[in-house]
Length: 117
Image (cartoon, rainbow, N blue to C red):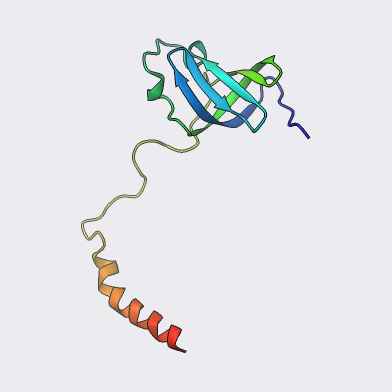
């Protein structure tokens, strides 16, 4: 059964191509779409690869169905990022892995003993 997509809905798709004029997105095995460069943001867009990467999962808004299984899509005014590209919420400490290293021999010995039983 083919999936139904409604205009105005926000769905998840995978970036399959990046060209100067837009971003190609695969919605499922039967449906694809294009985010025209004018649907990226309200400002001048110079490099689309600053917004997405190949094979990245993003949220897209369905603007309209243009052909059988091809959609006009948008990320303008959409929180399109599923995962953040830069940085991490995990802060590195001065100790780093020292605490783990202190216990590593004990944990290995304990695991070896449990496998002998």
